[in-house]
Structures are given as structure tokens and as C-alpha cells.
Image 1 (cartoon, helix red, strand yellow):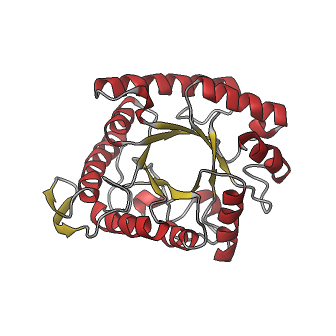
Image 2: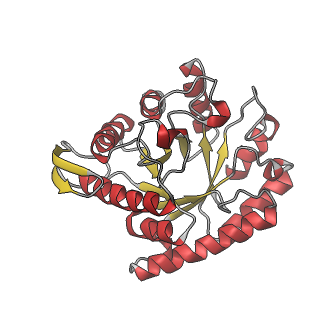
Image 3: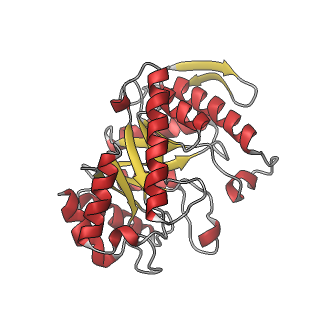
Length: 291
């Protein structure tokens, strides 16, 4: 049966609410608590929105079991050298409980905030491939000098290195063939929200997950890695409510995901203020399904 993980948005104010939600998810049996790594989010642009890394640091010293991570960090505004140093430090703060989700990023505020050019899909894909390669190198070497067309590191030091060896596990967000190949090459886990155009029909969702999972298995085989090499994580989008309509509907969702080879389901933790995400009324039977 897929494990439970929780996505707690970084808009909780005061920050003690974020920490309280992470601790509640830990008590409910969540394997991982993720948070979005954005500078802003159009849907909540006029609300408080905190930075992911300091929030995870606060959660690290307030929890003892649950794994913590980003879902997902991107090249939109993060440079591999500075981000690798933050990852290493967070891994020590968590005592080796860190998972880092990474992805190519999309158009929007995060891609424009630094004043650079707008990139189309091919360039974003190329930037992500180079960014991920350098991030992997930095996290597995004490000292790195790597010069690339988009990202470089000169005498970049990562001492003492990560607690987890050879480095912090990377969860790669991927839907298309190119990103799935990167997941197969660098990932310890893979996360998807299903169809690229987020249709809410359940059958469309499961169909897309199955097709993507099969494509990942093929990409892993091409790299000489077994299908079991990556944890497979399905994320329930913020506005999707049908899996939580009843205890039976949620159990059916878990069963279908297990049949497709998924190891984990990510739900947005209850948001009583706007009603999105996992309904508070469903929390008990969702937690019980994973107990």
C-alpha cells in the first residue's frame, strides 16, 4: 500500500502554524512532509509566503521522525552552488531526514523575478539537465570546479558533506520523456501530478500515471537500473477532492495506485481557511488507511 506524505504550503502565518501542521502530519504517520519551493505563488500572491529552506530548518528542529523536503526546487532562481550548501546544512539539521524534490520549473513569477529572459520549454529542459548534473556533482564532492554554458562552480566546497551518503536523495518531478530520463539517471524517487494539463477526471488521471510509470520503467532499463530503483510518488493536486469523498473511495484510490506501482501518495494538508486540499473531515480515515 502506498505510504502517506503531506504537502504543507509555506503560506502559514505565523510560522508556528507551519511547524504545528508538520508535527500533526508526523503524528498522523506521514513518511515525508514536503513544502513548495517558490518565491511567490500566483494563486496566493497577496498572502504571506515564506521561504522553503528556513521553514524546513524550523521543522527539522521541531520533529524527530518524519522526512522533510522541497517539492520542487528548480533552476528558476536557484543556483546549484548556493543550493547545494543549503541542502548539506539541512541534511545535518534533520539528522539525515532530508529529501530534495527538483524539477525543470515553469513560466511564471519565479522565472521572471530575477529579470532574466523568458525561456521556452526546450531551453528550460536544457537548463534543468545542466543544473541537475552540477547539483549532483556538488553534493558528492568535497571541492568542485565545473564550468558549464549556464551554470558553473569554481572551487566550491561542500565540507563536511551530506549526512546521507553518497548524498541527499533527489526526487525528480517528471512527466515527459526527457525529464523521465533525468529521473532515471539521477533520482532516488520520482513525483508526478499526472497529466501535464491537469484534467480532474479520475480515469484520465490514473491512465496518465500508468503511462508515465511505464515510460519511467523503460528509462530505468535503458540506464541499467531496475524498476524498483526509484520510489514512485503521485501528488493529488490542491483542488482535487474526489479521492477523499469517502473512506471507500480513498481505499480504492490507494489500491489503484499500488496496482500501477506507486509507493507514495502526497496530499495537501488540510487548509481550514480556504477549504482546499485534504478535507479536515477526511483526515482520520486517510491516516487510518496508512496505519
